[in-house]
Image (cartoon, rainbow, N blue to C red; front, side, top):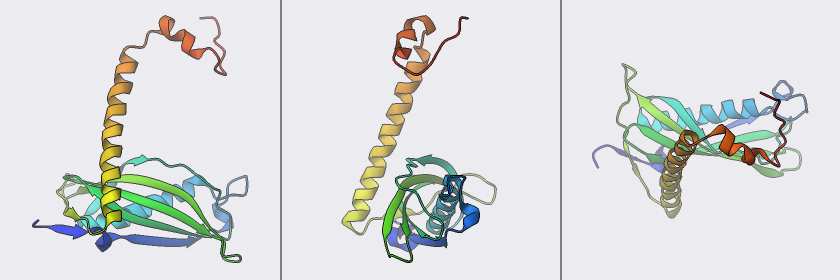
Length: 183
């Protein structure tokens, strides 16, 4: 392939100390802080692979598995798992470390889709991805499957929305924690 880069070429890790101003009202690190850090590491990783400015177009699977505490070090490990013509899927694994006890916690795994832009803000072709390890291949295959499932879900959901009939579908609300006021 003419222009291509390995997964390892752009792998990026950002580590940041979680300070009190990052805490939410419950005393844990605010999810928005973690999302911002994930977006930052996704940008660094994708722009390095693309050799260009990139923008975030979607985020898949942000599940907060465990809380992050003030005083912990959070490391965000990112790698390009898949590339399309102008898009890149960056997988991010978030690990928090208690610096006193050495305990490590896996707190998030997320997938950010980024698109490379040229100097005119138009999508541009990114380098192909060279898969060197079984792990690289596994992650790329998972990204392809996730993409197909997302497309299928979108089609299925669009069809369901089009087929929605208020009166016919009201039984779906039975057993749910909702109340309908008289219309």
